[in-house]
Image (tube, rainbow, N blue to C red; front, side, top):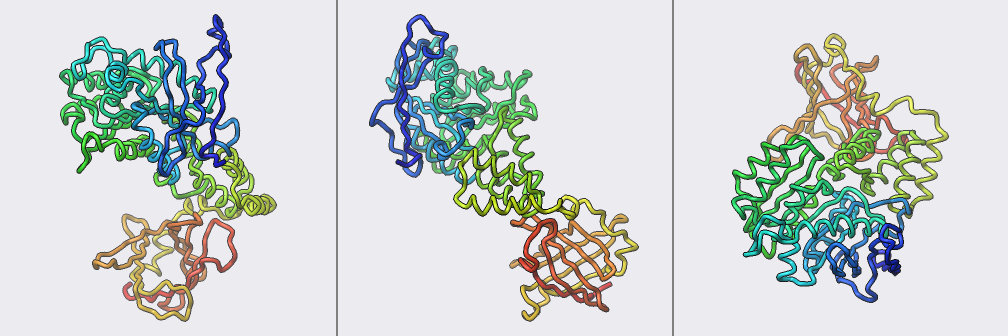
Length: 495
């Protein structure tokens, strides 16, 4: 059986009068052979939970993250609670599956709460007290429903499915009303995605309350408003942005060619992407390698929870640290990868590379050290000041086109080096050098590699007359001598 479709059989232990014992805590009870089909994502499993707060037994759908069956028992997952679970779970699960697979959000538990009564019961559960929605009273059950989620549902999910922080609440329409109310009044929610919320109801009743919370001290909030037909007024949003501290993350987007009914699918994707925008592998630093995992520690601090970096990030960091000769750090990253996502298929190769790095002495040359090296002084670099024209090619016998230029100049008392190419539109593409040193043989300069390995591409040039020629190498990593090496030759055309 695929781990994506793992069904856990849970036992309900009834113990009247022992409400505070572990046995009497609310438990999610599996409904055999019932599931919700989710295209291109793990299947949702159906459960029910008996609630003392609501005085009801409520259906619950749970989607396990892809790594759930392979991860270590100590790994806990962020929880994304989705309202209107009977209709929203396919979109939420598909969006989370795609985003986490691309390393843009953490793998998470999707907990979707269907409405047993889609009309009056839904309106009662999703309307906060003090607001009238669709003709409802001003004394509906939104607060009680949030109490049920926070005090009964989430603890059951944490116990039975290794759920944890941070918590994200996602709602559409009336669900977005309750989600916005939770952002305004409930510190349990670090992030909220409100899709097409009718925020202007009751003379901006909801925006005023969220703006008031933004002006008070407290835990930061990530509030995402994805809008199609409804949403915030521009004035109300400006007031919220002005009141919110820098620690808050606020994002608002208006969807084109979407209706109120079609907005949830795209809204789930965009909303979750923006909630975790700093988590994304696309937002993490590219180099140096030693700064990537500390970056994710800071992301976790901002989210109020320990966050496991994306699988591909841990895999690449472990491999790159081994190439840099940092064996102990590479092993720690590998162990984090295996605990969070299961051992990779190529674990034997990875462990052999790590063992080799552990046997080598500490690296004498590091990426951090190269980037921290002071540039040559103006006097040292003066023989190289000017413009040079030439090529960077795979082999010495390739034809020359003089398609690349080098510029070395002195500006503000400092040496500046640049590599210049011409784009398809004729505009210059300029890459500033990050390393520049005059050597007895000539000049060595470098820039960070734009891909892996996370190394400094060093151009080690020998000066003969007006020709500066040589080969490149990856600085700060240990690779076979000629791997990735390029040939270059430049002739001075202006001094």
